[in-house]
Length: 481
Image (cartoon, rainbow, N blue to C red; front, side, top):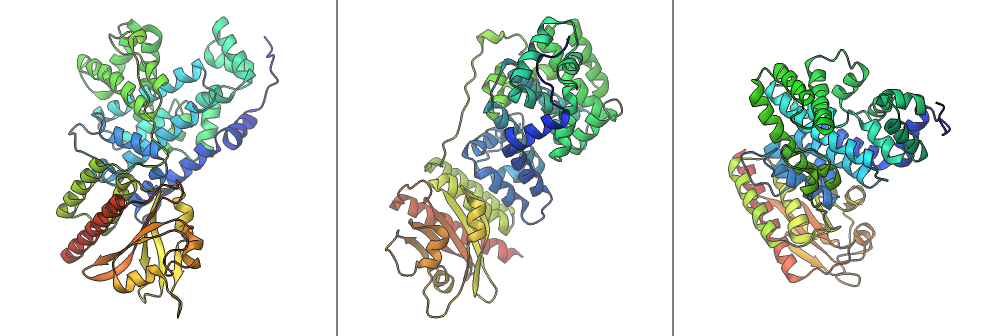
């Protein structure tokens, strides 16, 4: 049967997805991946990617505190703490997963997309568990490779329009396999889109290897394949069906585990996958995951989304301060202290932007080192000042004399001159000298200029407390060196 839709080439589809439909996902992926290649405080840079999105922050922390990632139930209230406890790669992969979900749940969702996304999350959770049983060196790499294995299918179903309608009809009404139907309607199988997208976005090396050599990728490739097979079998036939039981036996052989134990673990993984999909913000995909012994019609999963700007949260402040105290006692390093303080101010005090800047050794220049919040990258690039003779500058005054300031808006202190206003805007802000053993080494800055919310006495007091904790922690760690 000839296709009724004018066929586009594989390259045209890849270009459409990358450049028109999913450019933000591609940029986010590159931001997250590039962090792994930077030795300059990677935790702070990763936090910068996460904290600019309040919804992502909330979902990462939900995942970090879930049984799946945190069976010991170690409390984690900050992204910095999550990186310390779970590891950099784990948190990075959470961010990639959430970015993937966001790219699709905000698109033109259809039933096949919801089904594909649910299966991808489910298979990734199963694959990670199998990898742990196999004592794989990097279960997180297996997780991401499995999650993204059908990224071409998901992207297609999200943005395919008439071509997707025709393919859907052919797949429902003909006896063709999915790949045969794709070849007939599109002129190529969707796995080729997955392969090209993985290369275009420089995704997980294991994913690229498995897509390029599906029949020659060793135990890790078999791990990925079996995870998708058991998920597909459960969705199509049910958990008790012979087809599903057969795949679970194969998983037991690969993992070197007794079949009954493997089956129990796979059932638990399915329940965890539904919970994790909800944390990712994919409630409809969570409902598409078949749960052993539970009918899909009886399930209701609520998605939780964060607010655009963090709101003041006294309990969160206390939790972060407790974690900060524990970090000081256990050692940590200077960057970790700064990162956790910044996150406490941003999310606990409820600010739009928080920045830490260092003064040069000769005290003639101040330049930003870390920033979190909305527009953090732009602010960090602009935030640099040089000392000028006969010109007052609040930040250099704090470097010289220390202290904390609540700078009013336009028309306030003459120390907040046009040089500062040109960088931070006309609104009010807080700033504090950052001190190590009595020596002022930098500036902590925070504001609500983007949301226009008022800075009141309560949030100034909280800002001061975090600044004081920063100075105590930095001095304590420096004294131990």
